Image (cartoon, rainbow, N blue to C red):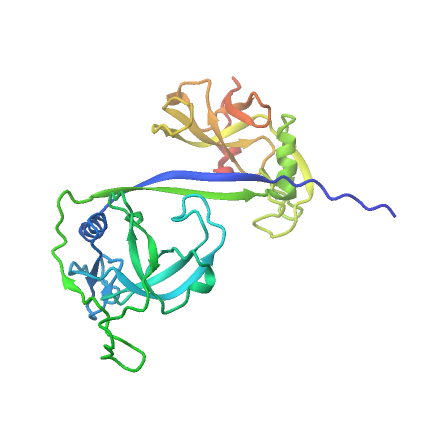
Length: 335
């Protein structure tokens, strides 16, 4: 008996990246301004705990809190995990440990990197660490370059005023006004996600068909809807969708929006229209850009057809066919 070869499944690296811009309230502004000036601030909660990093609302009562205190720059590792293969954008380029550190004077732990050049055997819960400040600081969490081992320095030699095994820390929290010259009022944090995308057998067939200027869906054997792009199973009935159905290429605009903000790296002039398009024979609408018509003339019911990209692997946009608009009754279930 000859074995049937498994269908080819596509796989490709994918990167999602964007800058995230946010403004800061008074507590976060003070915290990041303090890091820039090599000062670590926490906030005093209603139950007496010192929370670092500081929160703007009490973790117990949810009331707004602003009682800032300065804590120490050394602390104790409460838990850790070894990172043997650092990725792009992480604090250190060589292997390091992710650690939760309870700074002296704080009651909660701060997550950051620990530079442990001697490897994971040199890291342990309870070890003492200190902040290594970045040479250039701008008011972000990366102003702390990382933590580094500090040795067993809990307090003056021989001091052990607490219960057995606990020693008094060097630093006690001190009230702080939270005022700094030229305070940080906003940050831009780059967000990036690197992963390998595998679309599966159903979408592999769909993508292969697009390369030949065909749009391929799959029909549910129970509800008979044709899903485009196919998912391999009906999301409503939960059964496999094995029957291949070619749809389109023409379709109907069901809903749309006008885009007025130009995306970075996208060579399309604004305003432009992005629409839901129900291809003829499909059981739901897919997304596509509308071109070849002024943006303010795009409308529900507009009949459109694909214009393929130069690579031929996908439609670049959809344009009007010149047909009369579709009646609302023909696409109302696809909105």
